[in-house]
Length: 340
Ligand SMILES: [Mg+2]
Image (cartoon, rainbow, N blue to C red; front, side):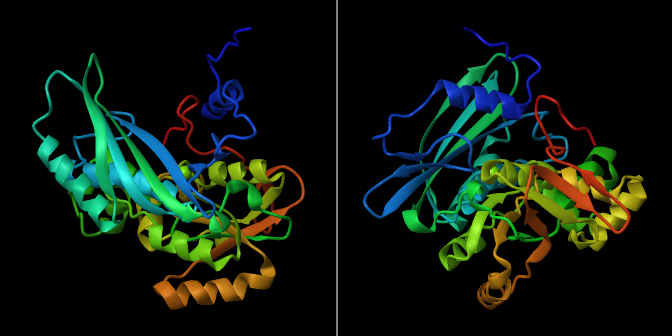
């Protein structure tokens, strides 16, 4: 019987599709729909990681403020980030583009940016497709990566009492987008440089993802694309747990706090719901917290931030000294879209 998928959330639609397409027990699919990448058995030791993402003009990007070179970089970055989220090394890319009318004049700049970011992460473009679209311009990238089967980190590995970590500031990209939308980005770019860069040219955490996965200390991991409130809820749902996030421990930048003041937006909305930060979100046993922080600092010089812990139950809760509220899945959803 056909089911009505109208008015469904992005999550419901993905679940519906995944129920329609199941795998035989002897297939090489270790993990299909529902994580950052599909995980496919390559040989006795290693796996292919496969991810794909589509960017649509006016939904994911605006050429009014997004330079084509940086758009090319971002198109690659958002896919590379999904490989990072499972601890893999990206290897190959496919690029599909649909243009209304003929190829746009900015295509060369876009491709130069795309080429640059693939080179930075040792990834080769090996195919794709270009077609005419009747309406919107859209760009789809698929990336194939690789990882040893025993180091891959899934969303489903979190256990009670794990500490929840993020790899960097939350909400910078949402603040950068809001500044671009408001027209403020063109005045005083220097003042907001970190935020504008977070929106226009995010950095996939490929090196850190590999270090975390290879450490063997991380239980669950994903990247933050739709906002902490939604992405941590995915980890909880897949792991059969809940999480408690401490409001004052959320890492927010000085520039983001200043931009929130300037635009009269709540800091917390950007940090929790903004999305597109492409930081890593991961859980670790409290017994290994110190070892992991030391390892990351030693290998990258980077600080990681503990924002809460995994608890029994369902959902994601945000706490401060006065109250506790559920914030599960309050991030970006394409079909019930959160608006800034
Ligand atoms: Mg992801």
